[in-house]
Length: 125
Image (cartoon, rainbow, N blue to C red; front, side, top):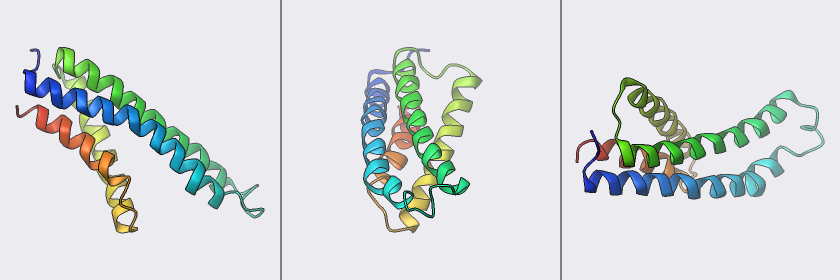
């Protein structure tokens, strides 16, 4: 079933926020994360190397969510696969958001909590 106009707006807003977050996430990686992992001690450290790769993989989650939200805005969340995708990404984002908030880093919590909130609320509209 296609979403209502209000639900469609919430989903497109989530899609836009996800797309913009790719750039913000990448910038934070280069400004904050990568310099912390670039010390001489970290050059051969498998943990530091994995952290850099993992940070960039996080961009994929934002990009995929932007695509999925645009799809859902047009066609709705119609099957269990869509709902499973939403549940897994929402849980991941909320978990990461809690980690940032507990560390006193609040900027990333806006998309991490906001995107799932927009998508879930769209299902109530």
